[in-house]
Image: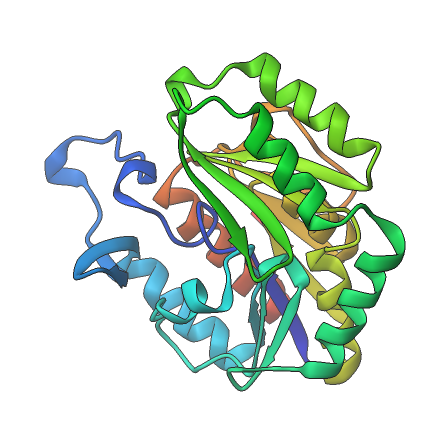
Length: 272
């Protein structure tokens, strides 16, 4: 039976220049492969070793990129290896099959959101009213499903994030702080639900996963084995769960380690 590998992308497998965490001497830094260009500028990287590991993984398992990115943001990533037959975008709001969204899946997501949580317009209005232009650079809506702010992280008041979390909690939403972005996401909008659907369609009996943020916690709880890097929200809060391994590596080295762990599990070898 196939093995399904569902992995977050940003700061889990691929990294911006600011997130690489190249702490070694320059002469010992790994060779990097750019996998995303935006507005004619290189944006995201993995190591060349990780690129080969991802290619091998794509040949050996059902690899499913699982991201909070919109479809447009995801589709500008050029990952090495076979083109994934399935991809999960917008935190589970869109299930792509051969690059095209599954309309029935999306319709089901919209129905759940309408039934279980406050409307997006209410959350957007609250963000507009309470976020200070001193530290907000952009207000964004993703796929008409959730909202996020691009902020100046060093100016962002921690108390505001906590207050926002309490406010959305009562409305069926959750908050996640990832780098320079503050996400407000409906609770029913989950990566795990979409991963379970792909597992059902592919007949996978073993599921593996990885992620670094609070929005990945449900994914890690849903898979049989999971890994998180030594950076990100989950590491900062020391989050763990049965079947989830906390890795010490940070930055792009963590992405390489995660891919090694995926391949070991797919091939039936012992996990390091």
